[in-house]
Structure formats: C-alpha cells, structure tokens
Image (cartoon, rainbow, N blue to C red; front, side, top):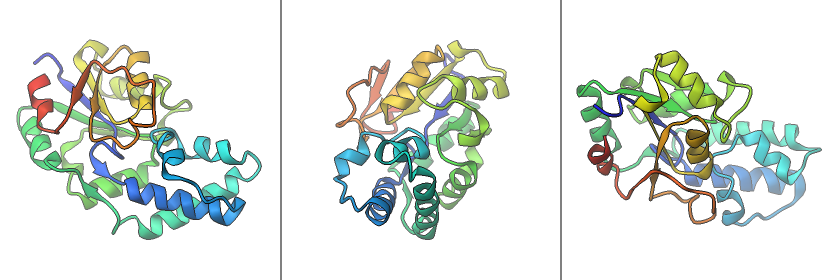
Length: 209
C-alpha cells in the first residue's frame, strides 16, 4: 500500500456543486454590485475560499456579499448537489481495503459534512478538514498539513485528489503527491495545474493506489 492516506477535495471532485456555486455567485454579485458575471470568471476561482473570491470583486462589500452568498447557497444547497459518477462505489472499495480517507476542503465544515451526508458519503471518511480548521488555506500547505497531523501520517504516505490548481498546489507545497480529476470545470480556466497523476474517471484512482 504505497499511499495509505487519501485526501479528497469536496466540491468539483467528489460532489457536483458546480451549478450551485455559479448560481450563488451570480445572485450575490448581481444583487450587491450589479454585475452579470460570466461562468468562466467564476470557475477560474473554484477551489479558493469564498471570502477571498468575493474580495476580488469588491473589497468593500465582501463581508456583506459573504452573508448573502451563504444564505442563498444554503437555501438551495440540498436539492442542487449530487455525487459524481462512481464515487460511492470507489470509496467503498477503498474503505474496505483499509485505506484512510479524509476530506480537505475550503468549504465551511457544517456544509461540507451536510453535503457528504446527503450523498451518503460521510461514512467513509476519517477526518474532514474544512475552512475553519486552519488560518491559511489552499494553495498554502496548511490544510493538508493539518490533515496529516490529525492522521499522524507522513507526506510520502498521502495522496491528494482535487479539481483545481488550489488543490494541486496545496499538495505540492505540503510535499504530497497529487491527482487531478479531468472532469473538473475549473481546469479549463486555470493554467497552473501540474499534478503527478490525472484521472478521467473516478475508478482510475484504484489503478494509482
């Protein structure tokens, strides 16, 4: 077992929240700063903390927009998400083979766990490291370092699976190998993705580990 500890990003990797995120940004930016934002302008920031992205559009109104985004996002969250194809079956195989599975996300923990529960995936994970667990976030190494500390794992034993440059760079900065998922909607708009592995379908992860 070369990689005993498998770390997963959540949105865009395990769970399809793309439309949820885009709709939430569009609603918020239109309401507060009267911008009709194009999807590409949102997707290129997929993976970074919400408040950071909002500050890119308005430093002055970021906190106000954050509250609006959260309320709108949570109001449509449960009916707007689903697990990507084959995620459940692959995680079950990994879990049964005694791999240690954890989520490392820039999302708030309460909503991350809620999404995992709705998709019936929470049962597979040892840890969920979320936005509030570190002071610095992806692409800084802190979220992965936090996960490894909780798991008492060495970087050489871990593999990070994600859909954005923030995931891949976080892994590199933490000294962990990375897997980029080719169903990413962020990847087309992000240029700094240099992963160790690429998978086109979730079952291909089994070939790597």
